[in-house]
Image 1: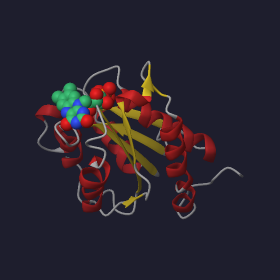
Image 2: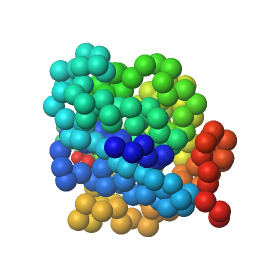
Image 3: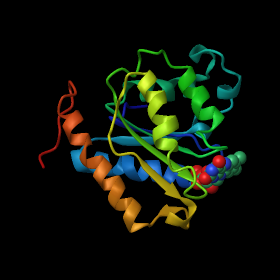
Length: 186
Ligand SMILES: Cc1cc2nc3c(=O)[nH]c(=O)nc-3n(C[C@H](O)[C@H](O)[C@H](O)COP(=O)(O)O)c2cc1C
């Protein structure tokens, strides 16, 4: 498996998933704009070894490969459906398996979905502190979408698409300083 520069990780535990589709849309936007490769994973991709894992070494080969790709990413796009006002338990468990210093200085774009507007601040009150713990560079614009912003599982809201594009605009600033990243000409 090659190492994509832009990695998406979505905390959805069922498919089809609006969150996965949203995270992947952002990943592909960044990858296309900068001529880089991108790939999105979710909890389903990590597989059944995640739930029982106490340490990253307990993950099966595929789970360990995905964990390694998240750690190696030049830009990480994360997203989770809102479950009971926060990210899903398995999303948190996946990041609990990562060494506290492994995501230091990594650009991270935060996204989330929810059934309605009530928990829109999940991106600021739940996701941002988690990646603050890791001393990652969370991008200033975080994006939350509700079920009504999707049609047939695809994000269609002009407002949210515009906000996502605005979030992606900030990636160039951080990518320019990443060692080994050669950006495509604008
Ligand atoms: C167990 C469970 C708990 C949920 N809790 C919330 C919640 O607290 N707030 C909210 O806005 N939506 C909540 N939802 C709705 C989902 O966040 C929403 O439908 C989400 O977009 C689903 O994403 P997915 O298609 O990627 O699974 C919940 C859904 C489930 C199944």
